[in-house]
Length: 351
Image 1 (cartoon, rainbow, N blue to C red):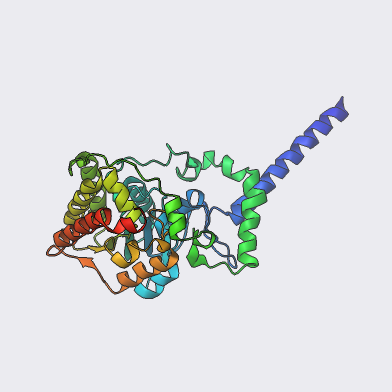
Image 2: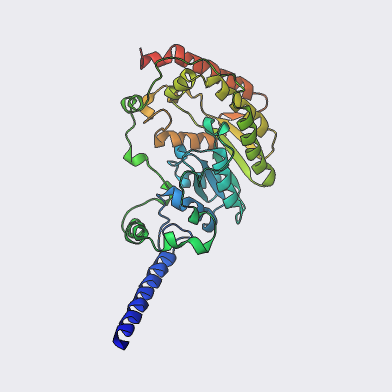
């Protein structure tokens, strides 16, 4: 009987030692950067934004952010470091909803003073819900809530130990991984008009155009979220910019009856942002050469890394900046271009 008890006791002691060793390994190397920045000699290997983004915002050293949806993942942080004299990391949420991005901004501002925020505004973000969607979409909230008592899904996770951690070590010590390319996905994608058109399901019938004020409530809430950031952080320069979506996106917005509301939402948002001294707004949606060439895209929205560089380059030179005097004309021109797209330019691809 005593022998059995000793065996059971020894078994449990060994299990506890094993669990403690696993926890220690995860905490020390921390592939999700939940507890600390990379150890000396290791790179910041960032490939899983839902699991890593919040941790990096809390533990890394930086003074600038690239904030936005998946179209921002292919910027190289080092471009901004060199062009603006800062240290940049990404705050990315695939959907790019304002509430989610402001959640990330709040996480960053907890312990960091930022010189710049390079903020990508997707049109859909201005009519999205004003409540964060992380929990509702199944994100690992134990990495978001700052409660160490529920970290066990991370600390005792076979995939973390056997996959994520070796992946981080291999990319750090063996490969030529570029830390500036955090969350980059472009190297695995094909960009062409055939690919873009193949992923576009075109509505056979044009719906009735919705009123331009169709999203008034959501719009007001999202504008309030953005202006609250400007008011809370007057020392930070926010560089807002609208990315160039393809003519397929504009064709879809028109056929869905959403085009007029999109333009109206953008006008109202820009008008509000331009009231703040620490806000700059740039408009790249109307770049005809880019948006009419579907070889720049893999679908309606996502463009090549070369377009990302083009946007960065224009930002660094303050090209296409909007002012109180010119923003309405630029948006009216975008409206006219969108009409030209559906009346004529799209016919090159759809007869």
